[in-house]
Length: 234
Image 1 (cartoon, one colour):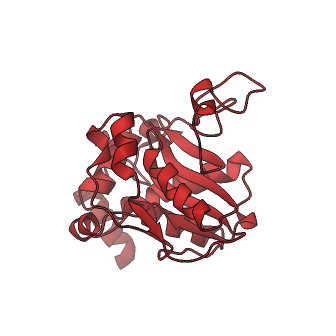
Image 2 (cartoon, rainbow, N blue to C red):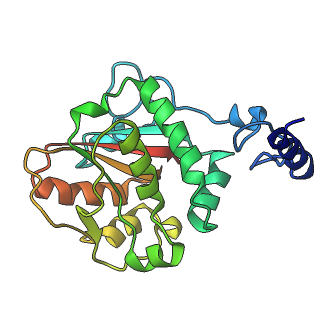
């Protein structure tokens, strides 16, 4: 037996690979086959602003028709349920940036299947993270996802276009109205974007308040078309 084969067999027996969610033995990847198949993809006719299922022939749900949106479309690539909930929680709060590789692969795979054509866009950006939080966490999870997606589709990734200027509260514990108030004037764009088509990446779409405020600032600087791409729709 060759030494490399011996070592691989030794490590496989001593340190078996476990599914990141259910902890059963798995051969390849972070999830076992059963858990990977639990990942659900939004299907059917979806609202272009919140990715909620709507009747055939409609472009927007009733709730979104009553609101002003500054992004032109959202593509939510999975449904926010297990095992995505656990994976994104670990990715954001447990200092496990390597999970971004796995999650971005899921995003790229489903983005390709959606028929979306990223090459029509000038560059990719991500929803910024408060500098203090980014320093504490060590990275911006949306930025890690955005870089992987941009690299795969060979589109420039820019992380110096938009940044947070307001130390806002954590959105997770706020209702819709307070989320909107919390993010108002929280972001600033530092250059002209006249005529630019932009893809903006985020991890989880909940009410869309943060995303919409970012896109408002981008449109104020002249951005032409903005498509939001998120890992999951809560």
